[in-house]
Image (tube, rainbow, N blue to C red):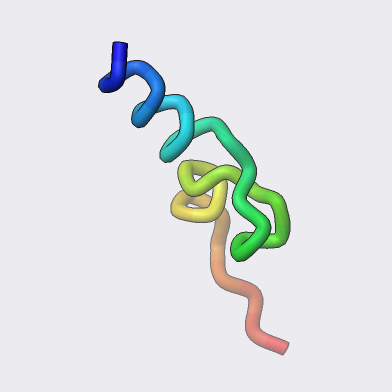
Length: 34
């Protein structure tokens, strides 16, 4: 059960430090240089 929570939190849950993106989406999106 803890593993399921950790997986959801780390892969699905949006994080404020990532502009409310999930870590998985952040990892697969290309970096945009401005």
